[in-house]
Amino acid sequence: MPGLIGLMQATETIKLITGIGTPLDGRLLVVDALTMRFRELTLRVDPERPPITRLVDYSQFCQPESIAMEPSQIPSITVLELKALLDSGADDLVLVDVRNPAEAEVACINGATLIPLSTIESGEAVERVRQLSEGRRLFVHCKLGGRSLRALQTLAGHGIHGTNIEGGIDAWAEQVEPDLPRY
Image (tube, rainbow, N blue to C red; front, side, top):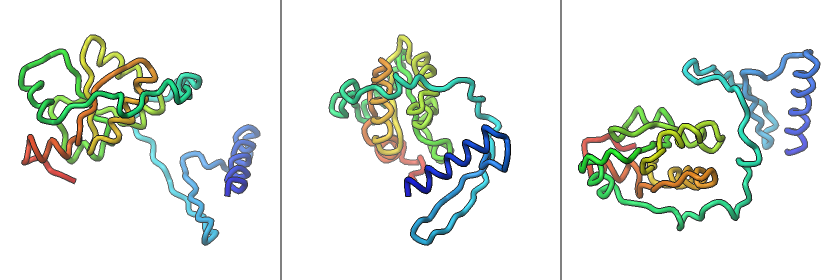
């Protein structure tokens, strides 16, 4: 399987470099090796997405595992503790939601800023998070708490530290805002 995919990637590279043939640009090739069938999916450009102007800092992105924080080292709070902080009127905190946009359309915590995990892991949104959290306490949530933990591990590798929200928006809907849709 790696050989087959590698050969197709090399072929695509040659097509792009030489300008001949039709590259898979804007299409995704799905390979089912068990049935030896290929499917093609057409991808649409998101007009709201900013253009890619630079690549991630590869050396920073691929830091050794020893630099990354273990999940047990990342502080966390419950949704009830978060609610108390928000109710206290504390203006020194920022709440980041790392779910996908489609999930955020279903339910969200008021005041949260949507920054999908994929954009943090790719390095694309790291500076945005750094700016948002400058001089403020960073709190991160997702649906259940796993993706927010991954986001905080990635951010820690960039020197940005924050607190995980245990149980995510699911716990928020259950314990704080019962009228919020659960999915």
